[in-house]
Length: 337
Image (cartoon, rainbow, N blue to C red):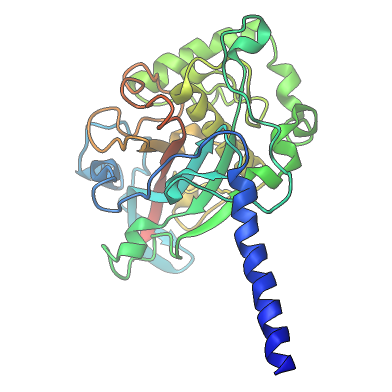
């Protein structure tokens, strides 16, 4: 009987701890909003295209596409194959000013039970001065190999395999909230912190909106601003769409700089992934999933740095839809069997 009482007390304590953690997270500033991503209706399936063999588009598309290898055949070691190019949805991302807000998981607000990541609370305000356009964001990065997971294409070695999982949470990254610490991974930022370098980004803005971003201008995030610093602090925040896309671009660049994300496009990617510490912006497209999924149209999955003028309308809902979610599409060139 005594053993049963002790067991009951232990179970009660465990249940108390389990319920206390979300409660502490919910007590934080701001209400987290979002919805689960429907893998059928919330996906821009036309963003898969174009599909190419060598330099020929076998399934053309009006969406801009970086150059593919010219030859239709390839060789990886002693294994011959067909040089294919396609776009693949591989990652989901939450981008929110509210710490521990998991937008693409239904707007759940979870936390570790202690105060971490709560530096970035405030967003743009109307108080005037330098802080008027300042915002600070967090990012959660998920593995989301949608095509493999849904078994749309079977036995295709070029597809990213695996299951849905959380890969990165910026709240526990000390480099993400401190611009001085961020200089450890982007010391070259001082070279581009000048009016001439920032003015040059206008060319990248035009190029990314009309077709594709200019990879040689790696310090630019097109119309959104500068890639530096590689963290969630935005000093020129115009709106939620612009600022969240800038932060997502910086985060993707940060993962490449830390050698977490690798290159998959071009001739070098035919036989496998390769190191890409300076991210090629043309490798990615960002599709909005929250609060309003962008599933069709020319700007459903624009390149990095494209103008948000045609995306901002109706994309943010005041109070109940200010947390952003994105599906990350990645260009893949592969030597397929």
